[in-house]
Image (cartoon, rainbow, N blue to C red; front, side, top):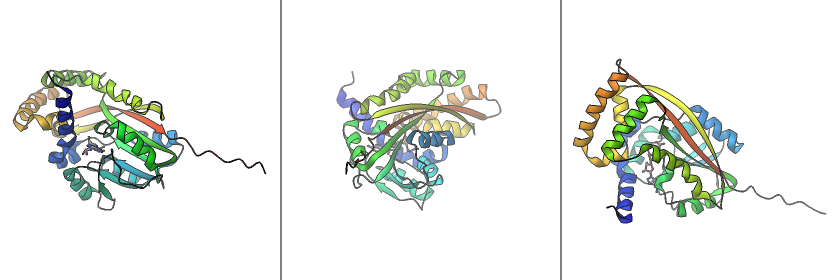
Length: 268
Ligand SMILES: C[S@@+](CC[C@H](N)C(=O)[O-])C[C@H]1O[C@@H](n2cnc3c(N)ncnc32)[C@H](O)[C@@H]1O
């Protein structure tokens, strides 16, 4: 039987597991589609160009690079040295600060937007929400998002079932749980949900290395991962015999806005 303490240890080990595989992560993980950043601009009512953005849990800079390319004035925050080192290699011109989303090392009321690309679930919302509200200017927003597997695509659902049997892990429940992060803001901020479907075509090796860069794989050890991925290679080749895999994702975006400053109306 697992105890809450075991769960905490596992959560923390998973949160830090990426550092040992940062180069693999940077080379193989999917990025995010332009439609996601269009949606953020539309929902916040503000262009990213010129906005002061902090990208929290920036990892190797996959999301930061997109924000920077859209003209945002972006600073990255990343707790792990392995990921931060890879970030510096990829984006030498963008500042990256070491720290956690639970205790932001930034002055109050400075940022227009805080982004958490696949990183919010590693924070402790009891600390991360008040910290975000402190650092955002009034009317500023937080955007949390995750690339989730499109489980209505038959081969992706079958692959998720195989992984679920292997890890004893329910991937569709995890997908539902991400949406439940709206509750982290209950009573404080209103949250809007927006979904964006997109896909990418990648060599089979990239697909497998992407899978292997997930925390569940990183924690189970190389030998077990290699055996699983060798088996997975055979299954995926049945679907894509030419060795080019079409991965389909639903980006789940949650956007929360802080109350705008109240205008003083002069009665004079
Ligand atoms: C799945 S990676 C996402 C990286 C990047 N944002 C991306 O889109 O590729 C999760 C990142 O969250 C970081 N992380 C773990 N705990 C965190 C915390 N408490 N606060 C902020 N980031 C955290 C990890 O070090 C890792 O770089």
